[in-house]
Figure (cartoon, rainbow, N blue to C red):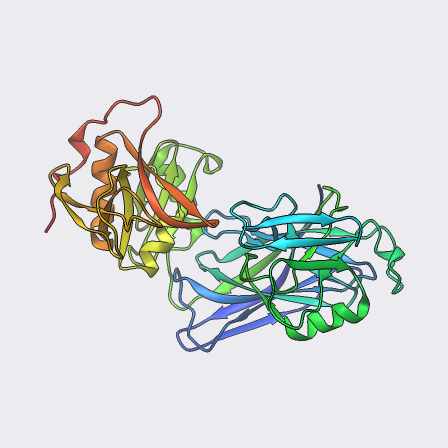
Length: 398
């Protein structure tokens, strides 16, 4: 992967009332320009998940394919514009077309790409983002054609692009046919905003079977200015390294606005970091996926699968007669989409549950359903014995 130096292209001014943003191309010879804009007029606050538009414009004379916009800190997830989706692809060699069946119970072997850009075009991608850094460094990963685009199919080399065929009504399977400028203009005219690709969100999605894995990376930065003096990520990483005695490179970070704290992830454990005044790790938590912090901020409770036993059917599940660790009532799944034994943890209970899980030698893992976390599973920590309970208060439901 070829890499280019870090440039600062955008300034975001965050206040309690409004979000102002300024963006400009890096220079005349830069291939891409990134602009970040608010989704609506809702104020954007430090540490809170916000919906932002990430606009990438192709300023070059080549065809480019945006693969991903990746925050280089740990708090935010990548904005991915290329991925497999749930469904199947079949090549119709006789017609030189692909058939996509979104009902097939598998992942496509070829990825779809939502970031194809001809010269002068832009893609507008909506993503959830949590501003916690003073300077957010981002890496745009993309592919470029080998020659200047002159309007011909040959000048798109090495990209052999298939676009969704025009259909009078929604049908399955959906057909993808060789690129034409007329059809691409129709797609661009109706698909101005894209999100993470999926079977129900295929706007601007194309198939490029000839795409080679020789991506270029362009590093840029967005500067945030906040009212007051919040505990920004740059300070948090420095204090976490001092408390843990480890290099920042060995630590990962997350943030929850519900907790109003960072979570520091080390190998096999995690702990909370609230401020510059903190001197030690406090009570350790078990390992868990960072996406749990997003669920804490957006959901009233967290579902955790703890066993295989299933009784009954129906939405919401039935309550069983037992409690996990004599503390947490156990519910059964609905018998269709979820099967087994589950905990329904109120968000206020989650931190204490994570503390107790560590003393039991357990960790949380995400369960992916159609590429999205639907619930979490309680699993044995590999090659570990239950941790002593000295650093965890006695757990109980209030």
